[in-house]
Image (cartoon, rainbow, N blue to C red):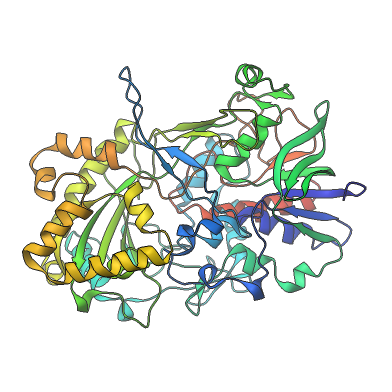
Length: 568
């Protein structure tokens, strides 16, 4: 490969990278190489875990994630000693990236999100600009009309209320009692309400970017190659002009030459790749002995997510996910907090009718609530110039008071919803939940956890004092529900300790205008200060949208690919 000069090399076979590779290689004159750090599985040879309609299997399988990527989530402690723990943050290291391990939610966000992007310098990214690319992506099995596509590579559908399991139905009954209306199509009606979630899942199987965009027909193109198990060590430059990259494979390092490189490593790894290659805050890079290609202070900054908490309970048998159904997140609710300056649709609720793949997860339902229009920001910085050392990722969630206030309000609303008769008929023993390291480890997909959770499930089935004691002593890791309700201060402390993201990292290489010192990329995704280099993934979002980020990320790749093919 050292003798070949590719027209385009795409770094990262994730949600954006698969789209980009497929679209750029449609033009036979373009030579395209897709580089993926993980394993490439062709669509006809996918492991069962990457096809499963249940979203809690793939991301807990160490074969498919960056095993050493750990992050700090809670807000910084101010002047106090920083004792915040770190935790694993599952990011896809497999062809398809996040789309191969995520919750399969095909949520576009609000038109207001894209108006906001334009106001922050992303000219050409208004709702009317992005809607054609959302439509281009999808083949909607339920709806047509001006908001939906019918011929795109990604099949999407919904599970309507007539087949909702008992727990999901009960939570949505409680939502209705809170004054929210039913919405049939979340991606066409942007008002507050509850609705069947749109999912990239057909015949109860995941439709990843790999499956949808890297079909066997695409893979057979003579101008397209894939290099998997290839971890990028650095981008190579002559002055400020990209010449290619160096990757590390099991057999050693190799250099790949390219006319243009498109980095699609995600919001944690794309800024790290840029910084290790000399693009970023000059003082930080010089301290690590990295030569400067472009001094861009915004690289790694403005890290955003959707901070949230959960409430869980023991589901009665009739409320559980039936054996005939694998999909567990079926309905959602979008609502406005009313907190000043936070806008409409700024909160999101998702019940999960099965909290994990194992026997205990079959019995525990949970309701997640997150800030859909968040303000808190963190950063990604380098700990070392060594590509084998993961970056330091500090989300600093709930550092903005507006996020904290809204989660306090949401906690009280979730507690109230759990007193609705439909919910009390469906569950026992409501408790505040946390996605802790202990919970994550029990969620790892292995035989040992299968055995342990089978025993735990039998104890829970004994009911009464035995179940309550098991929840209090083994499962719950913080205050009781009553302790939360008795004191907002207890809620605040609980949030700061247990707040979690939802794998929606974004904004660390954000788009903006040339005169914005914090902007990393222009509205065509070109990196300021470098020639022949773009970034295209969730990192270039100017602000996290009111959406699970996977579909907006693929939309962005469609749009940027279209720009490239048009000569932009």
